[in-house]
Figure 1 (cartoon, rainbow, N blue to C red):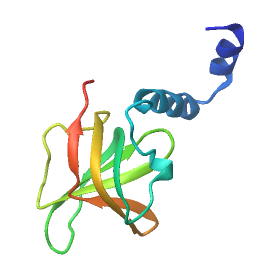
Figure 2: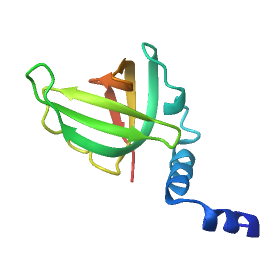
Figure 3: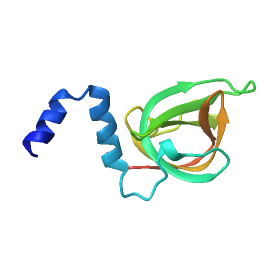
Length: 118
């Protein structure tokens, strides 16, 4: 690491450093970046779980996670589930499915998922 890199890191915000870390982690996995994700197009995306919650959808419980890869965020919803083993905060995951636009955010319903090693 050169002097310029050190100076850049010392003056960068925590959010910028975290975004860089996430982009480096998922680079080279042949994934669509979340910032480039389009609605109604099959995609394979990866990110780190930044938020989890149980949200009722049409009267049925749904486990909802938000992932980020440093370029953007997306939400994955697992209907009929109160919890999905392994999908916890700060866990790296790859999702495969079709996103749709819902209230200004991209949502994947019941995507296939693969947990990545910590």
